[in-house]
Length: 226
Ligand SMILES: [Mg+2]
Image (tube, rainbow, N blue to C red):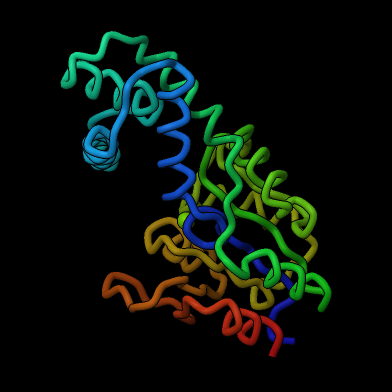
């Protein structure tokens, strides 16, 4: 077998984050009794995207995004509600969502039955990601989940990968493959860490040069086990 160990990204690779995000948003509004519709959600998405871009430009800290997006949204629509509480409620709702892509758990089960050691590598909040692993059943196929919040570093940081390597059985880096949908965190992180990379996407990205590109679970199984 080509690889003994697979490091799987979760959101956008095995778990459907876009659906989970939208459901969590509507559930939070419902729970707090705030009227909501598709247009408000679309505006929320745009505000959220612009805050994440500001974070990437190092203009704001990551910690404030969770509440700031609701503060800005509520201001714009004149919604009189507690934006901090809404941020917390959204997170709690998100934690209850473990929507898998079709075939995701079956892929992991097949790999596990062939003796591949599976680990999840994810940037996010620990209680949310652990809860979603449990609900989706992924916790039963993965040996361990490495959540950035627990480690204090995140993909693509070298320190994040050093922590992972120190805590998995395989010590030969040529036997380890990372699979993920993010060019910046998964693929660049994997390349910098000195392991092979599988970019989970239907088209190449000019900014990265992964070992493999595919959005087919069957193909991923072949890559790992052949
Ligand atoms: Mg991802």
